[in-house]
Image (cartoon, rainbow, N blue to C red; front, side):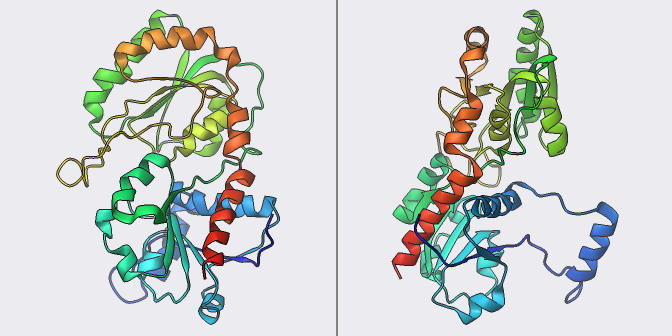
Length: 329
């Protein structure tokens, strides 16, 4: 592995002043007192897990050291996200930007004009890279953050439920409950299979891990995922997945259909035969379920994560991109 000086990593959540100058600081203290310590969301997890991965492969880094980076304009600034970290200050350094950025290039179509020192833009997955490519060309790359396989590992041998059903049916939910979830539950019940459901945004990692360790398999229901941390955590616990992957349009309501019509997306953008099976629509579900159950012991989902999406593997991929940027200067 190429030797490296410490990486300069930057990540911040948006926290603007609201009512008067600098009121974000007392608001932050009050918020922490009332709500407790902030729980990491998907983008924050990118920063945390990248640093965990760098720790594992022995690569040093500085975190949010603006003093240092201002004094060393020749060094690469690794801005994980969110976008305001790039937009709200003057950067003189070459920049590796992402993967915690905005959702579509329409939000910043002139990125490389206004910020010519951005040398690479990272997005979480391949379908998203293809969506960005017409705007940004070969400067946009797909890079996934790693899964903490030490935490997300199998710990139970007695599996009391046949399936965990992971419900991330957010957009047009009432319609999708009728067209997707309810028919699946009916088929599962008719086949005398047991299940538990968990809905996106309503659980802690501890709760998800506990349910996964009592489940023989999972049914993952999501319209699209830029990377899909939850299903990758599921695979890491060695729980195979029967995934709904409709490969339809990207349906973010801020863009679709008036501004952006892009397809195909994926609900499981990182995947191979180790992971389980996919079904396109409810008409395919029962037949795929039968095949899935007949082969359930042949799937090796944790092997897929260890070989492709561990903290170490993804940190090494990030470091390779970093060195490309560094060597171009």
